[in-house]
Length: 217
Ligand SMILES: [Zn+2]
Figure 1 (tube, rainbow, N blue to C red):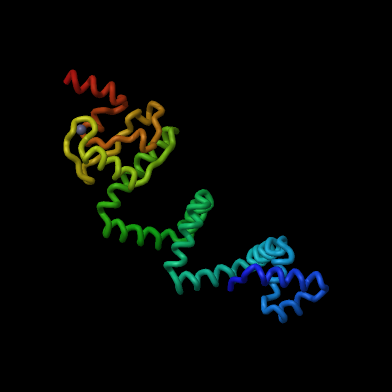
Figure 2 (spheres, helix red, strand yellow):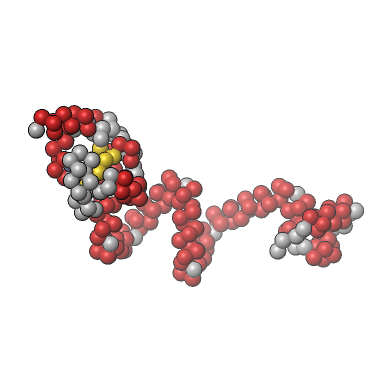
């Protein structure tokens, strides 16, 4: 419940007149913890720390409770997980790795089912992951999202950036304008949609070098 400012003022007055918190609570009709919080801003912080250390000592209990809540309200749990992942990307990655190691068979089975049901999305994701892996191996780093790649293809009108051939999400390939092998990053700014033929004949050339080869050809 929300209180207006007059409650706080009343609580402060009664407290300075020497009344106990319990008596104020009964008199004003505000709970004991709320009164404590109003009278001592540090109270809420200490209480949060208390809860945190209790949870740490009783993590089995907490885990059991959270599993139950997840089953009870899965959509709320999913939203909370996503919020946490957005705020703590590194920790979220660690957690999901640990979860995978514990439930490898289940996860693989679910993933295989998802791939079968979403072949188009999977094709794009695997292209993206492949270029991320290569960037990681070659040391340049960087990554982009499926949405960014689709937007880029839209901007190019789903045509090859080099020869203009029409592309679909089946035929498009991820080309690195400055090749990864020459220090290019795996960022969307360094990506162009290309047909397989251009991508494989471009090899480690920059767009300019490749253009001069095309002109000679
Ligand atoms: Zn092409």
